[in-house]
Image 1 (cartoon, rainbow, N blue to C red):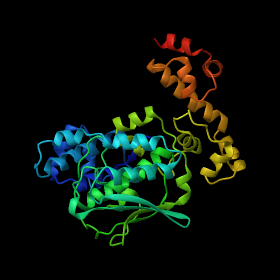
Image 2 (spheres, rainbow, N blue to C red; image 1 turned 90 degrees about the vertical axis):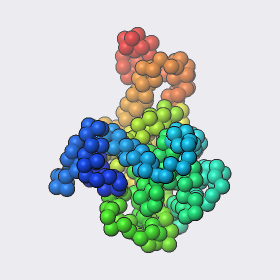
Image 3 (cartoon, helix red, strand yellow; image 1 turned 60 degrees about the vertical axis):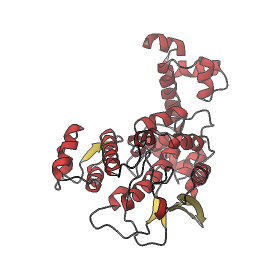
Image 4 (cartoon, helix red, strand yellow; image 1 turned 135 degrees about the horizontal axis):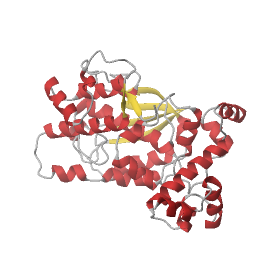
Amino acid sequence: MADTIPLRHAQSLLRMAPMDAAELRRELQALNLPLVLLEESARSDARISAEDYGRLFMRLVHHIQDQLPATRDDADAIRSFSAYRMMFQAMLHSRDLGEALQRAAIYFRRLQSSGERFAIEPAGEQVVCRFVFDEASERALAAPENFDMEQLHWLPGLTGRILSMANWHRVCGWFTGCYIDIDAIEMTQAADATNAYQQIFGQPIQFGASRNALIFNRRYLSFPIVQSEASLEAMLATYPAELFRIRAGESSLSQRIRNLIGSDFSRPLPGLQDMAERLTMTTPTLHRRLREEDTSYQQLKDQCRREAAERYLDSDDHTAAELSELLGFSDASTFHRAFKKWTGMTPQEYRDQRG
């Protein structure tokens, strides 16, 4: 189930689309998506693939953008502008989530002249990620509403704001390999009775609040960034499908650990105690639960490294010395020995067999 999301989330997107039923049907047919999305009585446990959700999401974003007043001739250039790629590159090379979010906040302050911004505000055991949306200049190019990484533009009103905040929640989880449990979601605007916005977050939103904010446990700020350059490119290429692969309470412990290990092996891998703390359990409990899943922490680390090594070898883009560095080995010979232990082949034999 790791590559699917509840159908109702996709249906909530359709409810936000400024299209009648006939037009929605044509859009779904053009995307080769199931028409069950239009059925109010669809099964509550029905699901849709993350890839299909992503295609639907992007199609609706473009449709909404196309309805905006065409007051500029450079709309296509704006849509292809990759400012978020630059920001994510800066976040990628942060020590932990707290530093990554501080870098993103600085990005918003420095790369725009209007008042849109967000700030990270510790509050006891919690942290408040507070968004400020400028009523007078909501179309600023770098405003938080420009949540789409590769198709930067503005989405109007309450919908744009909620989707922007939901996107940042998902981005935080993706960078850390861990679903960020939200304690509260606050919006200053009144609720729109025509939209079931709580489906976006999977929990109620407090409307009419004094701020626009996501509130979660402060411990998440210390979680390290676990993604790599390659995984960032993959995320941007398939946005937003990758952001939905990490979800609350649906994965096995082994999969949660694999997510927390991530794909950046140039950084030291977390020790067993560190991993147990991130999972809010003791090391004996972690050992026991992994035994119940017929694996161990060392086996999971080896599996993640092996899969990363095979992906790198498949690309033919790196020498053995470069691979050993990317995978966190002290030298090429150590990498060779480890790879042969995992696969029974040397890295070169693997490449020759694949070719």
